[in-house]
Image 1 (cartoon, rainbow, N blue to C red):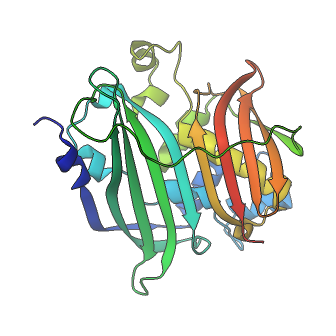
Image 2: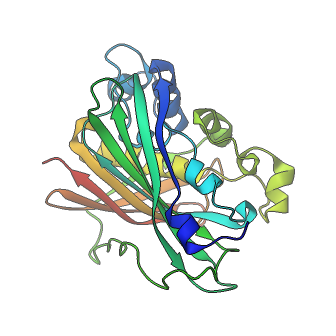
Length: 284
């Protein structure tokens, strides 16, 4: 079935139920690099069930899957994750049963042979109380699906990084087996685990999940700007620029202006920007 603008905009998946426990919360934190030093009391709060906290960006995996995009008919072999957005309405519990409502909110047609941008939104609330926890958003670049008759422009403008020297810089390591650990939080795309698949996709070896880099940047902001207080993060948005290889060092530059922390991440070994236009909104 060919992709059309009307069919894309009608896609939604309402009332999906998911349950996560403290096991998934700790596993996600380990997957984005928390707990490297088991004597670090601040990070231990994210990887040990005693007074456990959830890393805010865990919101990107607690209702894993894109049922809307899965029904779209786009060519998944040509899909690239472009952006990720997060609004926190209430800090995530360490364990919960949740309800997810997902829909396509916009589609931009770059033209035949030029691809398309598809914007999705997922609203997550607690089962029972119906209390809002968070709203996540994503942008995918469907490189093989332009020319379906949608608008040629639209979507949110990227957050601009200040031109001055960064106010703070944080280096965070990744393990050589980081992707194998992170994939246990939901995304089992073999691009991140199977060397033969990675080579077919044009990479010399499996790459780190973009959402793992995203969570690692959140770890850096938590450590550097928030004193490891997860409740201070009210939003976390980013644009993906380039993949990271497991084992590389992610260097995150940060600029604080009032309640906004702008950030950008590079890999130290290649001096290459991997996350750009980052915006972390603080609660105070």
